[in-house]
Structures are given as C-alpha cells and as structure tokens.
Length: 331
Image 1 (cartoon, rainbow, N blue to C red):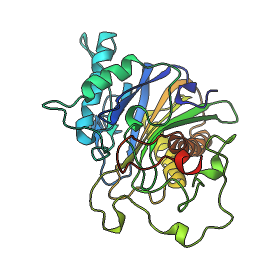
Image 2: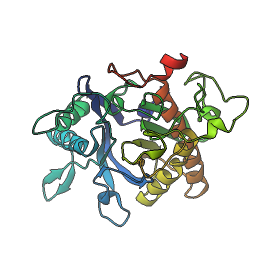
Image 3: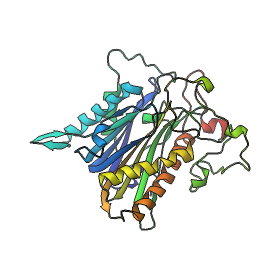
Image 4: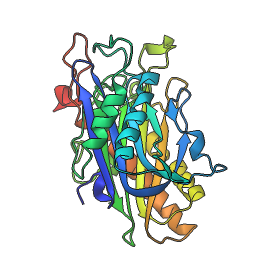
C-alpha cells in the first residue's frame, strides 16, 4: 500500500498545473468504467455532470473524474480529460458513438496572486488533457494539480491522499483538494483536527493539544467574520474495490463526508462547495448493510487523513501576502 488513491487497482491519477497561473487540474482515470455517485454538502458547489450521477438517471459508470481550480472556468478541465479518453477509444456507447463520461468539480483559487488574465479562453481544457495523459500509479501530494492554488483560512492548502483496508481486505482510498473556508489545524497551533486518525506520523505526528481552549474553538475563516464571498471548497474522491450499486456508492459518499467534519473547522459552510465523489471498481463483494457500514466508517477516516496530508505536504505560493505552509510555521 502506497497510502494513495492508486492503491485501488485500475485507478490512475495525473496532475497538470501552471506556476504563473497558480492553478491546475488533477485527473482521476479508471482503467475500466466504475460505478459512481456524488454527495454535495457545501453551499457554493461547482460541478460538471452532477445530474448524471443522480440515482434516478440512466448512466451508472464513469470513465474519469476531473478536479480543478479556476472556479467555474475550471469546469472546462472535464472537456480536456474527455478529449484524451476519446483518443483512447473510451466512452459510453450509443449506437457506435462513444461518449467518455467525466464528472468533475472545481474550487475557487482566482485571488491567490497568480496571473488569471488568460485572454479569451481559460487554460483548463488543455490542463485537463495534460493531466489525463500524465495519469499513473504514483503521484505527488501538496501544492500540485488542482491543489496548487488552494488555501485554507490560515495556512496554504493542497492535495492529499490516503488509503486503508477493511478487516476482510476490501480497499478504500481517498484523494482530497483542500481549499476550505475554515482551518484544518486546531487554533493557531500545529495540531491537526484529524490527529486521532493519523497513521505512522503521516502528517507530523503532533497529536492533539493537551486541552482544547475556548480560543481554539473560535471561528477562523477566510475574510474574517464579515466574509461574503464563495471563495472556497474541499473536493474529495473516494474509491473502493468493493462491488457496489449506484445507490450504495451514494451512501458511501454520504458517510465519507464525515471525514470533512473530522478534519475541517468549520465545514460545509455557505461559502464552501464541498463535494465527495464515490466510485467502485467492483472487484470484491461486501455485505449490503454491515459491510457497507464498515466501508463507510473507514472511508470517512481515510478522507480526514487525506485532507490533513494535503495541508501537511503543501508549499507556499511565491507571491506577496501568500499564506504560509504548515511546514513554514511548524516544520
């Protein structure tokens, strides 16, 4: 186990980003179409093909997921991923026509100091194509891909990943892009809210403070108490090798959202666009009730760990007034 989303066989991840733009794209590519669903909890989401993932709708399997910065401009990333898949002969067949199915979601990073004066067309379609073409079984964490331009309330955000197994050996893994309105650390200190779920010092091994003081529980958000803009979002992709139906994948996404609450404070705010995609590659059977409950329980832990790892691995942007990285403050 690499402690990455690609611990699930048949899943590949690629990044493409632009340092001057201070933004990028991450593509999650499935070697074979995967059953998928989505759960949205934030008040300001930006998604592509979200309606397709509704349980009432026909298509059950997807070919890839596109995550991007750029706010609504970043939704073009899905078109780039789709173009690469089309070149590979991938897609949902309709009387001989192949349509690659690529849901996606975006986070807001337009005010992070990067040059967003891109002219007529935003660069995210080309970045999406490059991310899909670069997809492999090993990938970098931190300030890369869709996490390059991400920030939290007080520290640089980033992209993280983690994985685990159930007692019976069913795998579940997560990838998270952390651009939350709140914080992932306790107060102004080095401790991660997700500390109880840490494995092997994967995000510093600092544990929790000896006591949680009232000051630590004060609200710390981007823009302060008078914040009005929707400038945030945490995105997560949860993948398992279990055999799931589309409704079971939706339930997995819903349970996995618990990991956001374990890792971010506050979370699911009106200024966030928090989204979890859940996908299943369909290799191992599980029980529909207890088995799915255990899988969701572990998925929530894995999501919390991925969020903390994203911030732990981040590096600050090279612009005036850029937020410091965790390692700048505490490393």
